[in-house]
Length: 420
Image 1: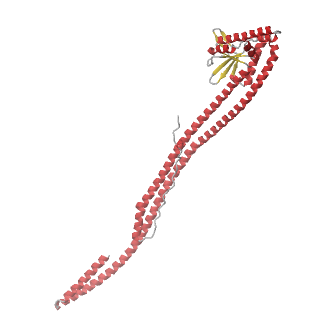
Image 2: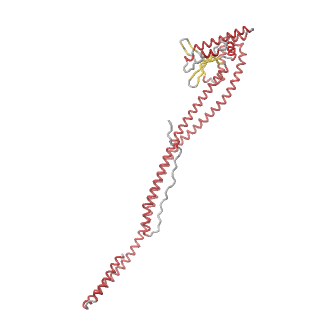
Image 3: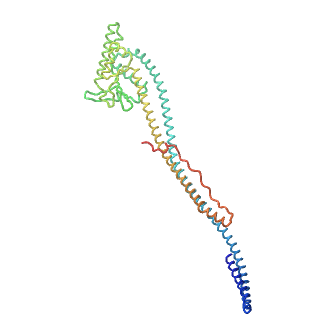
């Protein structure tokens, strides 16, 4: 606009200079010059009017341009803020939806884990209770064993007179055997003669008792030993006769050892160790035979026969009972181990999902920050520069960056694959 004004002024000056030059010319030309000056004056006035109109148009255009620039800047700022807010809301909705899905997935994993923990706690409580009961029962059984030994020793002397008949003696031996089993608490793991028998080429073998051991093992017990020689020795009135009858008793025990060894029960029953237990109903029967035949135990071991009295058989059966309880405890421990392994596996899965969720949340935050930085660096900066050029004092606000990141679990155990 100033250039146009300068041109107009230059033209006017040109006319004035021309007029001054023409004035120095002849008088004949002055009239023409006056006419031209009048024309120049008229043109100057017209030019002045046009200049005034142009000045007014310039002021009006400047005012309209400033108003338009302010509106454009305001609309641009609002559009940028709306765009950023919309993008932030969209990212926030996406993050909220992802977080909600992860929370549901996490809850679906945590609920079974909670049930597993309850089961593990129940198994541990059961195992601890069983251990305490086993220890208490073992102490009680030791006391009961001593009492039973004393009681059986006393009853032996009282029953001597009632054991004269062979049938009574056999029935009494079986009864003593059953009472020993009851005292040991092993009825659930013992079969008596009416339940177990084996047919061989030499006939039917019917042991008095079969003790079941953990691991599907069996021990055969026989209670048919004869002790008539001992009873006769108790009735002897002189020492030579008593000694002779005790020698006969020792021979009866040795003979029965040979017979049991020849039956070889361990060949007829599967999973049976290579020995058979020979039960003597009273401690005194073994003591008397050992006094007359000190090599009796060595002979029985050579024949794969183990001699047991009520006290030693109770100890043997209680040991077997304790083994059964330990087998149960081992089974419970295996269940606890299985539950713990399953818990570890599920914790590992949960840890991997948690890490994946934290990575995706961090990726969402990182994407938002990148967009925010790009907006501030490329768009908002240019808008601020535009505002500065136009002298517009209207600050542009941008959303702050997100600085809170999800922290994944740092325990390596939770991310490791469970062992097979």
